Image (cartoon, rainbow, N blue to C red; front, side, top):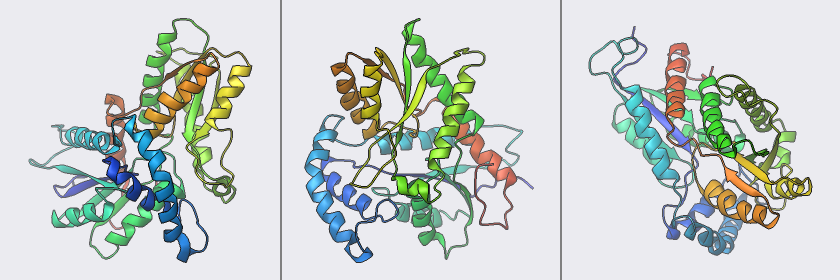
Length: 347
């Protein structure tokens, strides 16, 4: 039996982002309405409070998006990733595809803005897909990201006949590590012998999530350890790299993971760091966190302290990253038991 049939869909799950300045407030409302991310009082007050927060925050957030092209690039980049992945999966390869005309179709489902997962699922069902591989674009599992996105998806497919496989975490997938290492090595090479410090900046998470057993922080640390080890081997041979982990993009008054990236930059300035290479470790494409927070906000802060800040390129559509996603899909199809709709993980 072939591991691939011609009704195989791949669904990429991602956060989404406003596609215009007018979309900023409703995008924020959708985000803050999700109790998987943040609990705003009792459940019946979640949406009214989310409306207030999105209304008050929208002006400041719109100003940020004005500086990066008046919208989030996340849909354009995720679309490019989906197109590249679909092309890779459908390339002629006699070791993989054994029936003429076999094709994958790659879809995009966004959690908080268009194309919403609900709309995409309707299209998947209309296309008569009978096997669906769900690939989260969050390598590091958290209930606030993958957990929320999969829960949302399941509300729309629970009564369907789809054979669904979930790839919910892939923080230690070798080709993903290779993709990160390659982009980091490219950026590191620009220092040409100058001393520099590595700062891995991950999206923050409320400390309570970790205390309750969320594996996100452990996954982030494992990725960092693996990529540092990879950079120390051939062909890179970058041994003895100085690095640390910090967290960005916190929202609300609760305790979040520490140190913040701002605090880390200030501490590095005290230790007379003059060259800083920032690696956005939990992101697979550019969006406001890289283009505004790191490239503008943190760069200005670093300049203030006499630090020259460079950022590692995002994975976006790098060849190795697309190959990593392709292999994730194929590897998991080989392991998937068609009768087991509860398959989890990336191994």
